[in-house]
Length: 307
Image 1 (cartoon, rainbow, N blue to C red):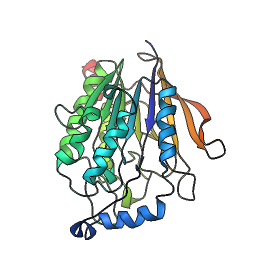
Image 2 (cartoon, rainbow, N blue to C red):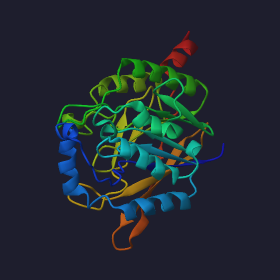
Image 3 (cartoon, one colour):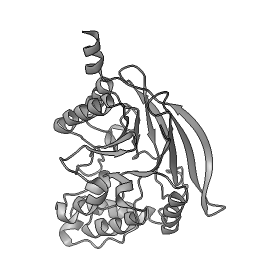
């Protein structure tokens, strides 16, 4: 099988000057505005422009984006984000899932996530399945409005049940399954205030049905965790903000170029870390490493063979 290459970007926090109504000033958005005024110099437009060019220059087969594209989930931000996303290339070569900032407050779908329909391509709701060669990109929506000072996520029983069905079907078809969500799937990867409320239920689904790779954002630092699969651990890879200058809270802008090799057999992922260099004012290769990915067999398939 031919190799496949993916770009993983996340937590763009596209710059947007908020103009809140009186009612919006009395909502959770006001807290985000105060936070934005403290951090707005860190998420720079020139980094975002360079990110688009760098991703295109590396000629990846597909781009995956794991949420927090906006800051305040204002209707104008969803329109602006759609314009930025169009600069990544053809919509069918991009898959995105929302983050907690994209669901900070309830937004009517027509003014919010529906504007990103070209990049989610939902047919039967979440999770979606976007097939790229012999890989299946499976997108989950963990974003929902929460109380002030919380950034937790939740998938819900219906989405988890459908995820298990999708993972089992794609696994039986011999496809490499890449799961996307904003919040970390691994236990303890982030504090409870920002964690996935039903993370244990997600991990149970993954242990039963299997996946080859989980990609997420949300964390300030790059992470590589592992969670139990049917036979072998499933790598969970986090890319932090792809737009932030290095600072005491953020490692600095980066994106990952993932090359899947050996699809259908001994599956591996070559990870090239492209980090923003303040000195060069450009993205540079910071590291290259390789992950051995599981060829997980869904427990239902394994049980059937044992009968």
